Image 1 (cartoon, rainbow, N blue to C red):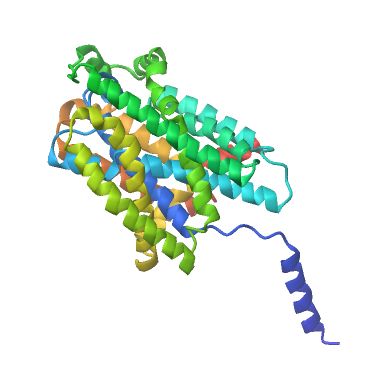
Image 2: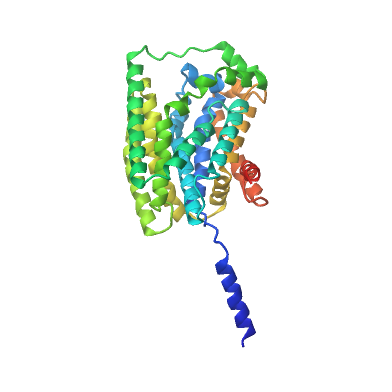
Length: 388
């Protein structure tokens, strides 16, 4: 008997018998990394504003009227937030698929993951950034997790009904804005002083005092969140993130339809009155986002996998940590309890763009160095250990 052959056969059988780990889709990690940097591209203008995160509450746009501000608004406003939402839906669908494959009850322990995300979002909202998205994602995840246990027909019905409710709600809000008085934001010296020289604890108290106003976005856009989560589920089921011809065809259609329709629509809205803000951010932006997914997929297939691509993948694998860190860094640089640079340079678009580039570089380099030693980001690692 050939002993070496027997050993080789036994080893091969042992490998076959081991449970297979789901393969990561590189495109998803790149998309997550870009979505984190793109979300910062919108939020950085809020941090640099003299009114800080309170600016949108009193009528100040996230960007300014400069050419750079307009370019950032066109490229980022609402687009990467929509992408991040879709990718959360994709992640939920991956976990559901894994649960089905291994015969585990669903949602099962997933509710604990959603509860942890909600707690994490609450802490993030209270201590760091008023426009947190994690709390809204956690609530939406619980709803969609339950929805995945229903029939495909029921899922599709809820998905498109949610989109219809969202569009109707945005239409009502826009109509009400045209029917009201013109938007004329006035500077608020007290708010300016809070972010220019106020303490960190004073800002925490301000967020808590105005928590309902700061939390209005995930409440108003909840139907959109449900739709985008379910869109992520459908894209994953259609294998839109794979490397085969079917996936390429889907992404090519997303590219042409998303950018071909979304960019002209977005430009037309930007050229219109300020009352169209909600349509720009919550209707046109998700359309452009679909084009971005197709464009990024096209680039990933054709660009050499160099340091930038690897860094984007690393940031995507630690997206939750990157999201929290970028807001913490921007707060420390811009607000009075930190370096207080927003009060000195916040009116300069070059300062804002330079700060975005600097924080982006820290995230890309830092995530890659971190993952050389750890398998996931610090926030993700904490979540795994606590839930274990």
